[in-house]
Length: 396
Image 1 (cartoon, rainbow, N blue to C red):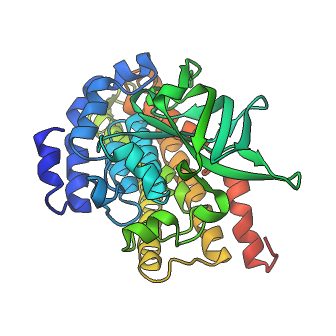
Image 2: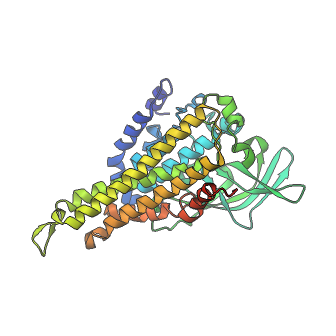
Image 3: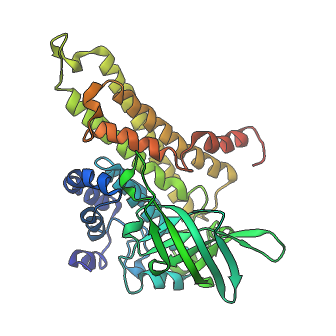
């Protein structure tokens, strides 16, 4: 490991320090952003820089060389990165969330991943195709087939999948399963106009055996007390999985929107209206648009910060959340995406042909936020409804 990481492992690293490290990546990310879009994955230089700065170890347990910081630090790190590159931020947020997730598995599974390689990276591919099979065998499961949408997979050493497993009663139960890099092949499938550099490709898993200890059921991981949270103690992992996990998607959106606003003000503030021969910044409509977008961006970040404070307090108590709490969290993640889309869309509408250039960050942020808003965690209609039901007293 790099010497900086070895030093880190001997001392406490704070959330604010990691955020400052994330912001220090801006020159590298600005230079590599175009290359990432062409590669359709994070360039090696950017990925290595994140690893060396320890940005992907916020949620990793201390016993395996991580910082074991409170829930959501991976989200605020991504917020800072997204001011410069949405794709890098998305990958950082997703990997950070996977490391928080893995920390709830049996400690033996964590030992397999981080025991010899503390900087090992874990991706996920939770969407499976019809030809995918997962069956119980002695002491584990046998799986094979195609799984989809594995962000950051080119930099990953392991991937978590989530197939249903047929049970003796004819029903199926879902499990998260940890698969090593040797057992899957990356399929070159990701060609998105937004978040293009995330490398969110599909994977073909050869028939492979997964021992039981490298799995955890949906039911088990959704409890505050999981095998990992019990083993590590403390409060970092004592939260229910579903609903909470998806908060990783909020950080890239808030950071992208703020970065777009900053870039917009910097570029449009000096441009002149060729027809009226005056600065565009003097236009009252432009001033109103910037002000309204800034309000939406501020509200999105306020919601994020408020929810993270709430979740951290909950984790320090019993870790339990009510159904209404979870429904509100699910709604808020999606609403942050709504606010980000509105804010950046309002800005792109006023930039003219200059805003359509490949290197224009406002244009890039608009494409990336549209893509982020297509994630299961950020689609407004489906994620808003559960809280509406809760408010109206309908059991969900």
